[in-house]
Image (cartoon, rainbow, N blue to C red; front, top):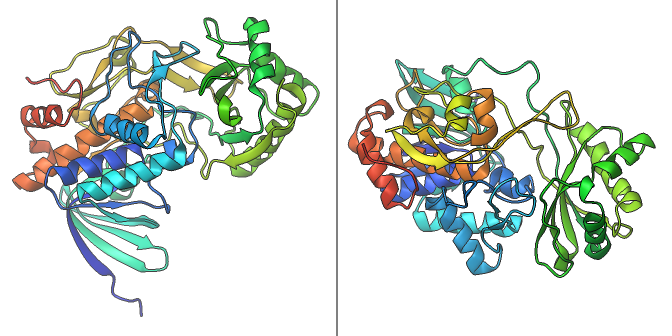
Length: 443
């Protein structure tokens, strides 16, 4: 006979403790709602922290105007205070105006500190296994906690920040249907130690054709450098059989004073075991081909495969490619975003989209709200977008924004005794502005 599961309640349940989920839980708790955050792994921080992303991006538009504030900016400021980030610095490759390097472990700890201060409850190693609905509302979310067992959570509002829209899928909610036959490839980022940046940066200065046009090449004494290129050396490694896959470029984020470099270069439409081989091949290639790489060693590997695209919800509004490229304004805006449309081609060694944006675009509230379930919202990568628009909206700074908006809306609804479809957008925008969110315009 199965043991009776523990029954838990929460005014706001947030699923997923990545950038969006942390922002959602902090916002909901600080707004006065009893908030529970569940995370399937043993850490907070999500993709940005544990997939070892080179840096957070998307905090500024092409002109250098800040578009992400609120919880996202508070986390950066906290990291700066503890020495885990230099803050927003110019992007050496010119893809965006700025980038925000982070120490990944310190990022996760800073987010945990902010969660504690907010009063949000946290359950780690807890996976969602089933969702029950009644009429047009989610009534129960079943979870399983490693070493503890099953629980039933009965929330007033749910915010799905799982990245893969897990709650939406288990609830049978409407989803986008425009996924291409082959979604963007996945990657496994790696960190190298023992890199001598002097010869590497000398090579970059001597071979500008092997790097993104307009790149600024830093110096070996810099705290941070950013390179996009090395295509000729990658091609040579592939030609002699040392690299089993083709890439036209890689992204290297370096900490020269530490001799560390993060490489974003592996990719596949298969899975982890293929990526593991690519990681080892990359280390071998780096030692043999890259100046300054002779003594490099594998210092760390992401603890999860980096997924760029998976399920996306069908919300009350859908953000489109035209919205993004046209910097469209919307009177229900709950924030701004400005990262280029960045889409990796599943069947080619490069990107299918690197479309820069002339200005920031609005994120309509309806992109966060389930079309057919009244107490279910989303934040992060799985919000309601088309395939192309997702190439911009999936970036971490924007995930902070959409998570904070969804968490604040959920708290307003839970405390007011109504559902997400009945949220007064003007009041939500005012609450977000008070929280420091940029671009939440009033009607």
